[in-house]
Length: 296
Image (tube, rainbow, N blue to C red):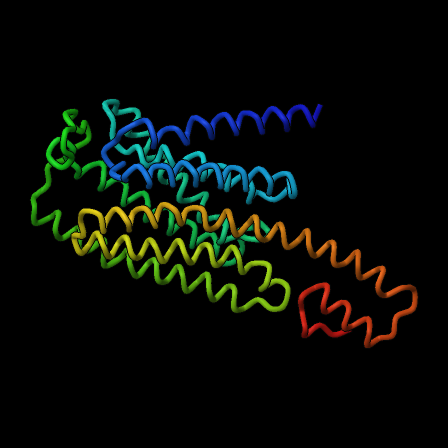
């Protein structure tokens, strides 16, 4: 019965992924100004996150990281559908943006245990609040009829602010957003540096993926602040969208490493035999665990 339930949940998630990944390819929206390569990259990132999440859930059902990956992957395409003819869809898209950001950030923040300890909750709250403020201003201050060629449906939530206020807000948000990304990157790197041996090695692929995403976010923020347009901006957006896959791929790499480590331990048992010498035991254990500093 439990197996049937898990199979049904997996099937439902895969069906939702099929629907979600089709959104950026077949549906237009205000914010979805990606070229078709970027839209396909977004759809692909959805599938990578969902598949990595399902595999992580299967390997470690008690760890929430797999669930967060799946939620992030399913929410991201809807998050890009910022505008539409329906006020309800606009609201749903705004919520999906915050959910995708929060679930996606929770993965590197809590990896590998899935627990939000120490300063992790504060870091996650900061990510969610920052993304929520960004999406609220985006929905409230964007007039798609003027800013998007061919768009004819007005924004029901549009507030016509003074241009001076808009400029000041843009400067203030850039002044906060870019340092925030730098601080977040520093916090992740510091968390990695404070680990040692196998723990540092296990978190490295996920951390590298998170730092790559932060780097592309910084590049996009700088490009937007500089007013970059045309093919150059399309390339920046494509690279940023593609980086959504970095953390899920890091998770898959970590799971593969665990599997290889188990194989190494099986080989270790055969190699050591029944009565290994202490020096030989230390060498074999250090090799199997990937920790040259190991002491027995």
